[in-house]
Length: 300
Image (cartoon, rainbow, N blue to C red; front, side, top):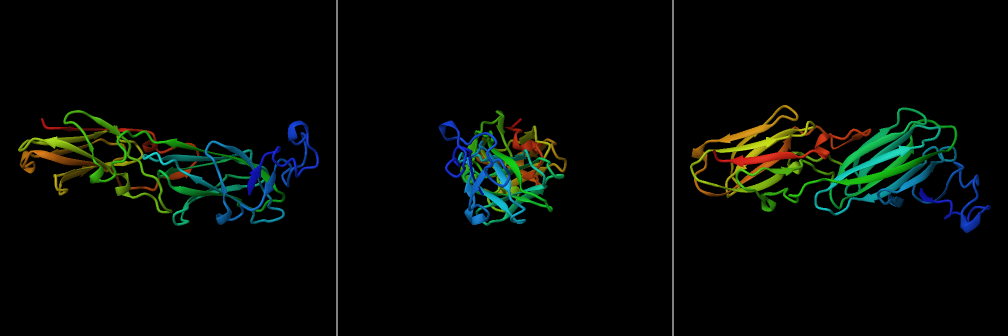
């Protein structure tokens, strides 16, 4: 349900103080704290929400056991994408559930419920730049009376100076022997978790002919497995290497006979063995949300 502040509902409340604000203690709704204006009980009537705003809501489960509050958010169109954290606090006498959906296909990204009556709940997910999402808040178990909650949702931009470089056509140039730092990150564009290819970071590098090449991926986040591939100028794969251990460095050694001519080659750094950790609960985020890898190409 769309939330109004006490000042905004003064015209609906009987007791108003100076400046149009409701007097302290005025009963403004079924939870005794706020008044709500219909409708936002369905996906299609979700109320627009601004990141960083703290709002008070009420689940009137006494009048409607299936009461839900829906909100819609839009990730900034900042090229890199980022992660969203939703916190439900000040929960009253009920067990609250939070759900996240992608607007593109109405697919469910994550749903979790609190550990018990009155317990807080935190959720997170990776967001694609410019994508829209909906948040649904509801009661999960039987409750005897309406109860309130406070919701605050934040967006944090991923730190990656080389985005967009998710395709070979968008490969960013790197210099032989000079490391670059990037982030293996992908946001939800639908209800399906991002796949291996969504984590792709492409780079171009100039190599000399008939000389061995070494590509190293270091500082790999502990929440994923690194994967390196080398391609020729036409996009044909020359060699690849990955690690089966999360957080382990990856070294790709290519012999001189594979580098037939001088010119532009492409390096692809990506994630392998996706485990679905792009969304979850609580406040501990996957390390690849905030950590940067180091990528170096040399011809010893």
